[in-house]
Length: 237
Image (cartoon, rainbow, N blue to C red; front, top):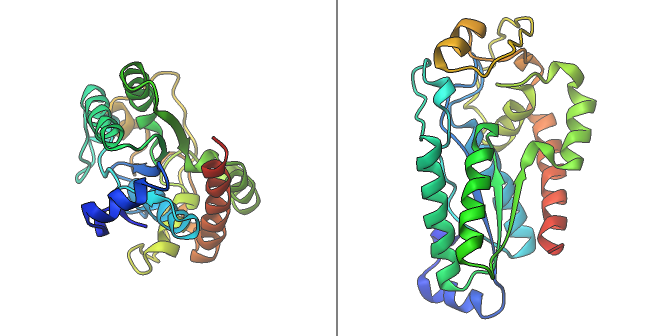
C-alpha cells in the first residue's frame, strides 16, 4: 500500500473507507565505518511498508533527510536545519489533512529529528485540529527493545548500532560490508556535540556500538517485532 505507486483516483477511493496513513521520516548521514548513509530512512521505510502490506494502511514516501548537523564533519551527510525540517513536516502533514487523511503515524528513524518533529506536530495540530497524530521511533517500540536487549545488550551503543545495521542487512541484502571494524570504547562527553566535537569524540563516526554483531537474522527478528508493534499502534487511536 504505497502512496507513490497509486493514482490520485486510487487514493480518493482509499479515503472513502480509511483515513490512516504512515509517514516514515529518516536522515541521510554517516553511520560509522560499517552502516550505510541511508540507514535512518531505509529502516523506517521498510518497517512501514511491511506493516502497510499486512494492514492495508497507506504508506507515504519516506522523508530521506533529517536534522543531522552534528554529523556534517563526515562526507555524504546531508542535513536539514531544525527549522527546515519543521517547515517540511508542517507542509507534508497539512497536505495530507487537506485531502482528508485524519490519522497519521510518523515513524521516525533518527533521534536527532525528534525535537523538530514534535514542534511540527504542535503547529499542525493548532491549525488542523481534527488531525490525530502519532510519533513513534522504531527502536523504542516495546517488542523491538526486547529483541535489541536479547541480541546486543550494552553493545548496542548509541549510533551506527548493530540493531539498525541488522535491519538494513535484512531489508537490502548486499549493501552492508561484511568486513569487521574496530570497536572503540564509549566516550560520552557532558555537552551536546556539534560536528567538530562529534568527529573529535567519535573518530570513526560511531558511538560505542559493536557493528560487528549485526546480522540479517537479527534484522529479520527486529523487523517482525517492529511490524507487530506498529500494527497495534495502527489499531489503537
